[in-house]
Length: 199
Image (cartoon, rainbow, N blue to C red):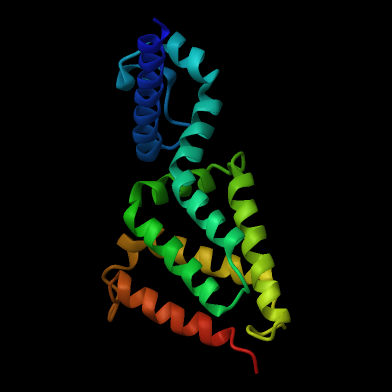
């Protein structure tokens, strides 16, 4: 008897999340009103409050949902990796780049979060950065990567380079000699990975 109600509640929650994702991607957190969220999702404002509490909690849920697929797969790879090596780092760069390429709306959502000084969902990316930096440190100790650079800086360098590429792609698209996504990734990997080779 409760199964249809449960399914309806899950569908309603999913509909609210999808509507919120679309609005937040288009306008950012600050500009979106609860009225707009209710109209876009086809529910009442009170139902949004019932499922999420307030707009801030809904914003957090949207960001977590948008990042969760990448987060889970990358976390699993980092936790299950055997002996860390340069290939683990290279694979991490490629995985993040492909995630951003396949999810341009997520790039825009992250950009809004950065512009608005939001740090409420920092726990997920901080956990991945910590795991990644630890794997880099282990590879440095094994002599597989140069050991005179901060492991956390290694991870944040590729995160920033990949994110910035997609966040500003329309701006730099017409720069002379600018290549496509795959050409950029290939050149970035050459520069990045060769720069981390031990002396």
